[in-house]
Amino acid sequence: MPEYPESTRVDGTPSRVAVDLTPLLPGGENGGAKLLAIETVRGLSRLLSDGQFLLLTSERSHEELGCLDAPNVRRLCVQKHATTTVPPDVSPRNKIRLQILSRARIASFLSPSFRSLIKRYLFPPSVRQHLRIAPSVAKEFGADLLFCPFTMPFYHDRTIPTVSIVYDLQYLHYPQFFDEEDRWARARNFGEACRLSSRVVCISEFVRKTVLENSDLPSERVVTIPIRLAGRLPKLNAETRQSALAAFRLSENGFFFYPANFWAHKNHRMLLTAYGMYRARNPRSPFKLVCTGSADDRMSTLTEAVLQMGLGAWVCLPGFLTEMDFAALFAACYALVFPSLYEGFGMPVLEAMTMAKPVLCSDVTSLPEVAGSAALYFSPKKPEELVSAMERITEDRDLVRQLVAKGIDHSASYMNAESMASDYLAVFREALE
Image (cartoon, rainbow, N blue to C red; front, side, top):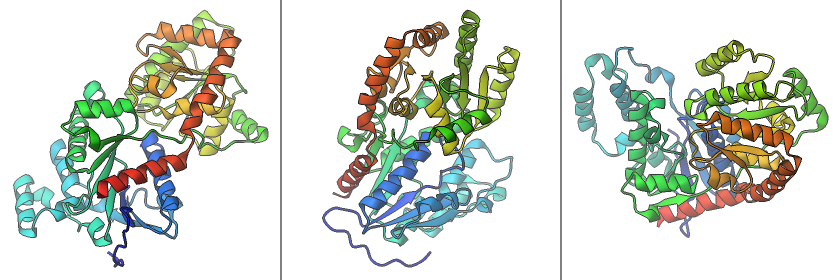
């Protein structure tokens, strides 16, 4: 660990912030949390140009985060895959314990002798060799504050205030979407964030409400900061857009668009059912369906279902796209369709509005809060309602114009990344009081 000069914090503003980005994964596997984490760090580093940021990274994404390098931002790889490999016979809970105890937080609480006892008590000899407890990197950096954009304060030090972001508590509402290990880990992460964080940031009022209902946190420690990155996608010229459309055999304004990873709560199966019904009722419709997201086993299963339904010529599943291709498809779609069962926020809804696209949206969780009166709503559990919404949006031009106008006005307040960074800085200051 390199040596750092002493912190120079003044006027309640942190001069040195450690940011735990170790949970960040390559590609799009973190969903919107990755985008928020990266853009918030970028905004904060500009806002605190005379401060210092230490990004704690893992080997799998250390190089990718080079995009954040700046005179006041440096990266430190604190996780190597070789030290986290465990035998296949380790139980799910011991795997999670191993991950947690391998992080630096434990070093700030326990003496070396007591840590040794913990290891012997929790793990058999075959597992102990894989456990490496790192020093408290945040403390050695001289951090005024630890920022945890992925909820769990793995590198918490009791002498350093911590701010964590909570995105949702989906595992409580849809436990069937998670295996036992994942549910246990998510519950542990949420509990530790509540216990150890000086402030918990929620991305919507809906999330804040569910956090307060499922914790003993006082209301003043839980803050809402909406995601204000609606205008982040680049504006492309017609030639660039047409090039991307040609690659996927799509036409301008010729398809419904659903940008979402193929997680269970994103409700792709219902969408596919509804789209099949729509095509049966409207066989001459020119509108295709395009679903983007990180390619995985769920996407493969959905692809098989598309073929079995005879929709191979009408449904496009291009996988995870580059930012340019993603922006091109978003700008060229006819409408956004968003049938998610559960959202902590729902960023694509606002992105569509900034691009003057009408939005068809689920009427549950955070989505009515985020979309306001600028969307055509349907129940995500009733495919016939989505079919009716698709038919209305393709037949009623006045409705399209109304939704687009409302969307442009509504999304304007979600396009200020600098304001979002300022709100996070204000929370940091509160945590330091």
